[in-house]
Image 1 (cartoon, one colour):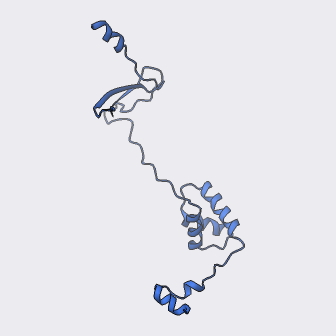
Image 2 (tube, helix red, strand yellow; image 1 turned 90 degrees about the vertical axis):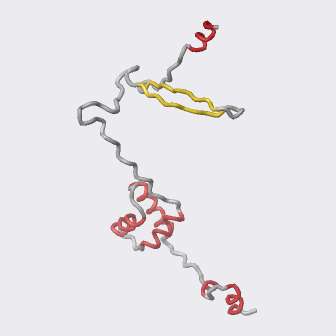
Length: 146
């Protein structure tokens, strides 16, 4: 079977069978330079890194840098949303920063499932400064009320 006939049966271009990858001598050095720039400029993507490489004297195109970028698994981290203001227009504080123990407490309702499928709901209280949870004397009181 000829190459032409096999490619026609598979629906491939004949050029894909004859392609030979061109190994570049500076591929490893360019990869190390890209990784170094990506770690130095954490919020830069492959396009900005390409500009930095060209400023450093590398002859690298955007497509080549993108190919290496993807091969190395580099990604730009998600941008963090800005925090809201700590105060309202009337001057009151919304989120207090603790300066000592027992100054700022946080609470949350937590639910969990027991082994038999029932829902268990808990109120969790935590001291923001010491990060200690509130502990109740409830079990001892429970025995006293029986």
